[in-house]
Length: 103
Image (tube, rainbow, N blue to C red; front, top):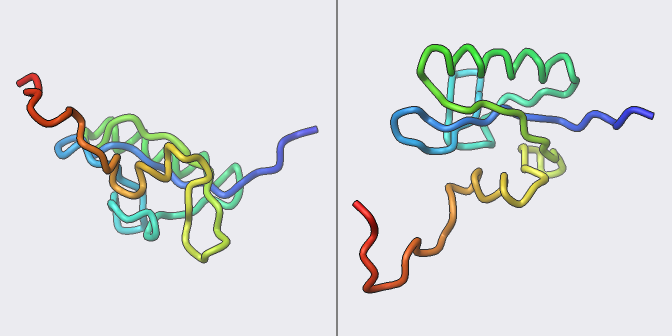
């Protein structure tokens, strides 16, 4: 039995800034609430194809689909890793105080 399709959005990383971005009608945005939502597998394929084209144009890197819930009216990633990315990344220091980071 085939797995039921869940709504999806396309995410990637901005090629210049490195931030997580989401494909919207107006291009790539940092706010997942503005992302275009695929409600069918065919729509998901088309959105991912647009992400691949943007990668070939050196706009983003690594586009892929993320399953989202729509209970709040806006897309919310189902996986914790993707929720962290959608919220702007980790909220902890990368190195303890007093330890120099590599340049």
